[in-house]
Length: 621
Image 1 (cartoon, rainbow, N blue to C red):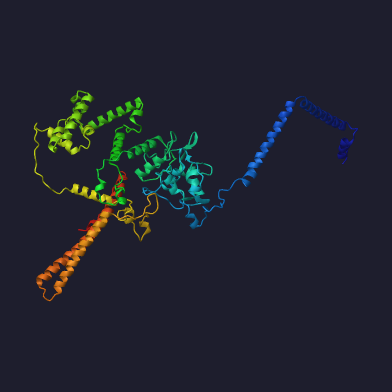
Image 2 (image 1 turned 180 degrees about the vertical axis):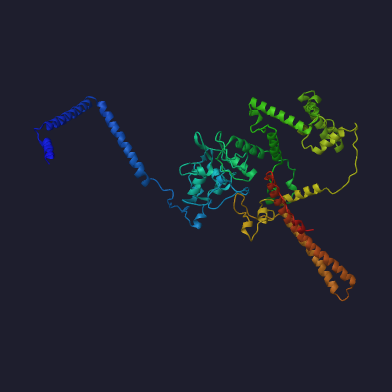
């Protein structure tokens, strides 16, 4: 107690030494603060510029505080609408877990292109769950371009495999303006497709950990092009375009989202696919449609042609041959005139290596002699015209003039024989358009015989040519067998759909090829009418003979005659039925052959196609 009291006394007693020390320190500190304040006030009074700086700092601090308060509390409350807000617009409706509302979104069910014959890769799968608002596409305010490509084209290519839509055309835009889509699918397929925060980057792209951090990796499926297995490259990546995605869909029947990063090897692969598919188709036979008796509506329908391109298959085989020979990147993507000199030199060196490889494979024992003969063929035309293209042009013009004024076929062959051994067919066709390969080789064969002006005459012999007959049948039936047509009997989609089983049926009224069956084929209707008339006349004849047989004066000859014609009537009914059954069979055969070719093209090494053909027992005889 005494100690505490003494301490208290020491602090409270103004005459104590400790109290004096404390008071002196406080006085000194107060005097120092007074001096500092006086210095600041004096400097402010003496320097007006300091006042301006001080006010500016205070103003900036106030503006930052106002921005934080406005962006955090005021702006979201009064100026922003939540993404799931229900708009008061008759074209927009709220999506929920109710299936009736969910079906309004175009992507609430899996949308697959007719060319998609394989399961989608894991990075191309699109969810069917909807959320947010559902509104018409025409009411959505979308940017025109995204990553350098059309936004609507990206949306439908990623979601439904419709990679060939051209939304620059107003009629295409009008066709899809009324399609409804929810906020979730709009974000998943377009707005947030490649974004990280709140987006779907990880769902559609591969990423790989490296020494530089996590980077994008080649996201091409392993079933397309080179298989990287677990070593997907992360360098020199380029985005997949819509045209390249469409080329993969056509060639491999698999959907790959445009916009994914792909490596240089896959970029070259898809560019070669585009170049292969852009190869012009083979020449078609010249048909005078004025001589056809079809109606105006059906005559201009595209004839049924199975997909596939012979030139494309040859080019693909050539690329495989070049890769196996160690000569990659053989086919040009850019025109020859736009290539650099070094690129042209590399192309020439690659061609030389390929020619040497072919010569060694064709004649392995006497390659050098074979090479000399080939080189002789290369320079034969130049030696024939002494190396002058002008002289060749003059000579070929004279040959062409004599060819066109010739009176008969033998004379034309005789004229062609003068140059057939020296000038190739491709060069002759430039001067004689429409020259057939048969005439050219006939002239070449005549030129190698003993020199004479008379052609040997051979007796004309008619025989059954199976290939010619099949070609003729294909020619007369291809106008009646089509994938889609306004004629019901010609439309493969409609004719082969099961009316009782929706799983085995396809609608013709939806999709980009939507159409109605409101046209009849003149030939088909005429055939049906003729068969009906034949059956009607035969039936009337049999009915008359039946009355004769029932007459009391009928003899055995009348009964035999009646029995014979009754059998003929039954045969007519049978053959009439078989004709229509054969028509159905030709349609099924065309589609089946198309599917078989597609399966064979997609076969991998070690796989085989086994066909159990038992339908021939039921074909009409």
